[in-house]
Image: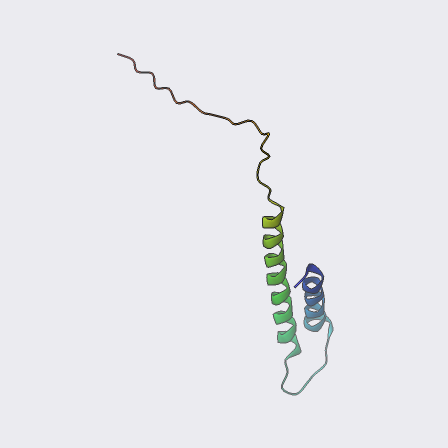
Length: 76
């Protein structure tokens, strides 16, 4: 599911929850809107986490290697 679909679900859920005053027998449109908004938010979070992992790149081989030396000084 792409970012566009997730934003669309958020928008559709917001419209059903806050802007519609229709009544349908057996269907609570406010609850359906809340569910669509929750699915949109979860989808955006999943998309962002996957996209973030794809953009991470390993360091280039030309990068300098940093070596740390640990020296302990003892005083008598």
